[in-house]
Amino acid sequence: MTQVDERDLSRRHFMKGVMVGGIALGGGAVLMRSGLAKASPAVDSLFKGRKTQSGAGKVHLKANAIAENGRVVPLTVSADDSLNVKAVYLLIDKNPVPLAAKLNTKGASAYLSTNVRMRETSVVRGIVELADGTLLETSREVKVTIGGCGG
Image (cartoon, rainbow, N blue to C red):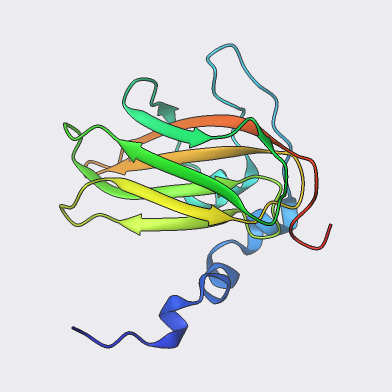
């Protein structure tokens, strides 16, 4: 088993360097006919302007429509085994740090499940990056009744 530096485990430390632009811009989302929410500043910042495509039927996001308590919101992102997945991302548009989780798959199954905090009702995005650089996205709005990030 390899040793892991504590800094590598700190999502917030990592995100300070990656998401400065996305945090400063914040982000609302307007649903479009395609079922995808309009690209958020967090997505633009993280992927340097690369556009996402609909992952309908290939990328799956499991999230309750209503989170009774924003302090513990279970979310799961997965992708079909037929896809050659490089990484899985979980973003929450209106959180102070939009990137909630990232998983580098390195040939493993593309399945990410975690509990997150959500400060307010927001669009949650599951994004899968394929080995060829294609970004597949699925999203949905999760309504929060009690805030979890100081709200």
